[in-house]
Each structure stands twice: as structure tokens, then as C-alpha cells.
Length: 497
Image 1 (spheres, rainbow, N blue to C red):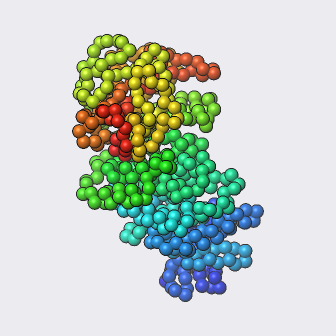
Image 2 (cartoon, rainbow, N blue to C red):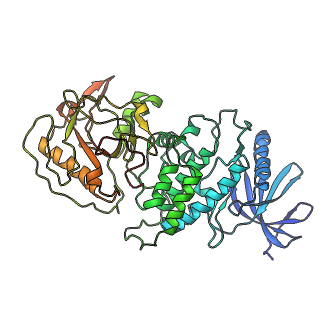
Image 3 (cartoon, rainbow, N blue to C red):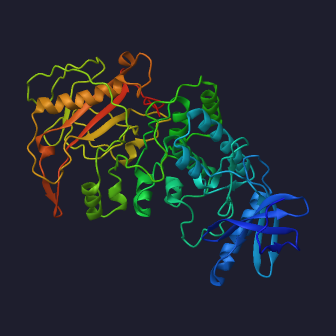
């Protein structure tokens, strides 16, 4: 029996006794209650909203009861009863005594990969059950995942779930949900589909294994921009688990990882031998970490020029987690030539001769910022045009190159900083690109025979500060790309996800 409060409320003709409050949100209160007939603890969600908003919110609660009530899966919180008394609405559901995934990660830090793989399998099964019933959850996120110590993880809060064919509650133009866990096509106003939930599952699993939200930013606009333009880079996950997460986070819904392939990767992840946790495992976190901000040329489509410049100038480019493991360094012999194209004698025979970008360079206009892990139908060759938005394609399909890295040779973009010695610029960039290519970040067998990589640095013209529309800006980006040595198409990601 539960310990009762001094003052107790009863609902359902006295069957349920509200014992104490468990949590409170924007649309109501969740109570710990006792089912006096069956003698078991239950959770009761009580709808509490202003009278003027009661209609729409009440429909959401009723929707949750109907949807969850018809889903039978150990990974979904069960609904037992729906009660309406004196204009009040209550949902009686399974009581899960467990922290949310958010609380668990904030308390214990990132999940070990094996534990995260088991969690992923349970959540994927729950989502499949919902999708087979014609339901899209639409709010999969760490705060809606309960993680018991022994039993299956539970997906809760179907309050904004929607049938594939049901347009209700979506015609007002209001964005309901958590932007950091909304797929790009959902933010663009696309049709509801199971792909929304699969992308959100990827973002949720990224949080579980990395310890922070991949896309959460200081405000809603910045968060939505990150979802639309960034590819997060896992630091602690590896192998099939990392491939699963990045496959689910594929921006193109047509190329996104499906449930069949997801199950295959999970089986591989669960069958692997356990490894000792890394010594630099991140400490528990309560707030998102500062991560390397990235942007792409497509920002201009959704932001005015002034805002773009403000973002570029204000972000802390090149920041890394304080506990990131140092990468190995390599030695290079660089000729003293100052010609447009320089050959750096790097330790990898897979490196293509260094090229420059900028007016008069090998690639006259390479102005779009790119993201490590991004895949393109575009080949970096002399005279190539700047890749347009259509060149950005998914990595799980035919593509020419993958971005190994992009970095700033100098971050004071609006200042007249002297152009560095060309040999030094080439040496630093080839060192960066080569060490990434030779590292475990590219887990491809015989990669120096089967792959090649390109190194591109800014020339003096790209380095110069120019004034456009009243704004001072330069292009001091360096690039590393990887592709097939024989010039054929890549068909899957090269970098470890």
C-alpha cells in the first residue's frame, strides 16, 4: 500500500486515490495514485489548462489515451483508464518508477555503447508498434523515455501523436514539440511520416551516448537552424552504433536508415565484445556542451544577410571539448614553391596534390561552408564550380566525396590579417587532413590503396577582406575531402559515424 497524504482526492467513483504529485507541465499534473480495486500504484495525468484553451488541449489528452490504449508493446507506457468528472479529464496509466533518459544522463553521464544499443532496440520496437498501428509519436526525445534499471525502456507521452491520415491539430500553423528533436522535413512543413520518429530516435540516441543534445542551441531559431544545416560528430560512440545514429540522422528522408537496416546494425552492436570504457569518458552534464558550430551555404536561403554575418562573427569557431583525446601528429617535408598548386610530400600516398581556392586559384569559388561527414556529388578538381545545394546528398547512396574536415585557417574573418607563409599554410592543412585520413575516423581496410583525399587551402584573393552590402568578410576556409581512388562513386559513409 502507498503512504497517503493528509488530504487525498479520489476520482473514478472512488477507485483511484491521488497520493502525491510526480510532476507538472504546461498542460497538467501527473499524480502517483493507488488503484484501490486492484491494489496497485498507477500514474494519473490530470488536465489543467485555462478555460479558453481547454478544448484543444483536452483533445490532445483524449488522443493520447486512445492511441496509447490501443498499443500493446513493452516499450510503451500502458493506459488503463480514461475518466471525465466535473469537466476535469484524467488518464490513468502504468506507473513506471524510473528516471527519464534526460535525468539518467545528467546523473551518470553518457551511456556505454552496449547499454545504449539495448535501449535503442527497445525504443525501435516501440516505434514500430506505433507505426504499424498507423501512429507517429511526433515527440520522441530523452525526456519522454523512461529507463528502468531492469525492465524495458518505456516511451511515454503520446499527447501530440498523430495518425498518418489525421490532419487535426496541425492546421493552425503552430509548431508543437521539441525543435531539437524534430526532423528537417518536419521543420520544413512536410507530410507526417514514420521518418519523423526515426530521425528523433537518432537524436535521442546521440544524446544517450554522447551526453548532450546534438542540435540544442541557445534559442529556438538557432536550434532549428542547426537541425537544418549541421551534421553532428559523435565522439564516444563507434562502429555499428555510430552508423545507426548517423544513418537515422540522415537529413534526406529518402536516404534515411530504415527499421530493417537499423535492426541489423543493432544486432551487430550487441554482438560485439564489450570493451573497457575510455579513460576520457565525459562527466555527467546538466547543460549542453559548447560544440564546434557549423553552417552551410544554404543558411542564406533562410536567413537575411545581416543575421548570417552576426552568427559567423559571434560563434566560437574551432572549439573542442576540453577532454578530447589528442590526435597523433605527422611530419611533412614541404617544398618552398609559392605557385598556385603545391605538392606536399605527406606520409600518405593517397593524398592528391594540394589545391587552392579563390579568384585565380585552382577552384575559383569555393565559398560554401561544409560539415565533416557531409557527402557531395561534386569532385574537387581544377576549374570546378562551387557545389550548389543540389550537390549535397545523403551518404547512404551514390556520391563522389565525403567531407573529412573543414576548418578556418584564420578566424578573424573581418580583419585585414596578413596572408601566412604559403608553405606553413599547406603544411598545417595537410597535417590535419592526413592525420584524420590515417586515423580510426576512416575505418576502411587498405584505404591508402582504395581511397584518395584532397587538401584545399585559400589563396591570397580568398584571404583578402572584401566589403559586400556594407559587411566585411573573407573566406579563409581549408577543406579535406575523401573519395574513391579509381574515381568511382562511394555508396556508404567513409568516416566512422
